[in-house]
Image (cartoon, rainbow over all chains, first blue to last red; front, side, top):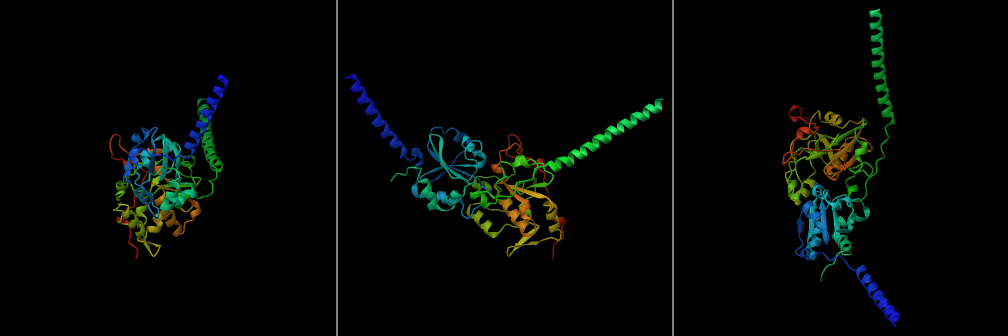
Amino acid sequence: MIKKLLLLLTFIILITGCSKTKHYDTNKVVLDDIYYNKGNFIDINSDYLNNQNHKNYVLFAYNSFCTFQIPCEDIFQEYMTKYKVDFLSINIDEYKKTKLHDTVEYAPTIIIVKDGKIIAYLDAESDDDLNKYQDVKEFEKWINNYIFIPN
Amino acid sequence: MKKYLKFVFAILIGAVIGGVGIYLLCENKLNNSRMKPLPAQEKSEGLRGIYDIDKNINEKTIDNYLERPDVVYRDVRMLEDTATWENKGGERNLTGFVKGFEVVPYAYLTEFPQEYIDQKKSENVTGLYKGKTLFRLEDGKYIPNYKESMEILEYLFPKDKIIFLMCGAGGYANFTKQMLGSLGWDTSKIYNVGGYWNYNGNNSISTKINGSDKCDFSKVPYHNIDFSRLTKAN
């Protein structure tokens, strides 16, 4: 009897465990509440960013001297205004002092962070990401794969 | 006997000095011939490729290519930029540079294209340098403003050397390379090695005075162009 009960219990745990895993697989990053706001850049420094462990946010690391046909911040701002999502922003000099720089070395970049860890980012050295810096639809398609946008 | 010993001693000293001198001369020549050839130019991919930043010789790897006698190193930023970069979170001052690079401001070489000025204005960056320059742009061509313009340019960017260009992010370095190419330089010998702001190596020299926002530019190897001494071209 006890054996049957144990078997049943194990079965129930396995079923619920699998469901939970399936649920996480399809989850997008739910940003911290404060970032579902007005669609602004929030300028920060390295001290602030290094204290954002276990937080969920989108970071724009920029290099002021960059010159592209369309300034990439205009692309990101259009997206942020549409969806009323705030991004943290940090200049390259401060960004180099953060732990994230160990993984993502070049600016400009957009980094999606969950629980303090990098989930995805735009790579300034990749041809695949070039259009996301210069076309708001491409950027939207990319970022909406990763972050949750409330209806 | 004493004279004889002095004579022998003098010969020995002369031989040692001569020997050391020849050794050093040969060692230098040997080192030059042992110097590894530079990797061929290869453009970076992505956004960095738009600036024509080199894939192999750039901010990450430049420390491996410093102090080469076959290369001149030029940082094309201004010591104190006239533009309002702080409006975009940047700064005007040359707060640091890579050891070995000498500063030759692109802004003094030629005028900024109007499209660039307009774009910066739309980004709230105004006040780009509009003063004297060695060349001006007319219908996409570089025209010397002074009789000495080309001579100065050839002195600053010798055609018989490989030229490494650096700036803040790679943009001005790209402009400089385009200009030199347009004026007859072999662009296969000109490398855009990227921007100081992406540099994290071991040869960074800060110009900031400890505890203040001020900079000490006396540390910077700088090429001044005294326009008052130049002869205006016809």
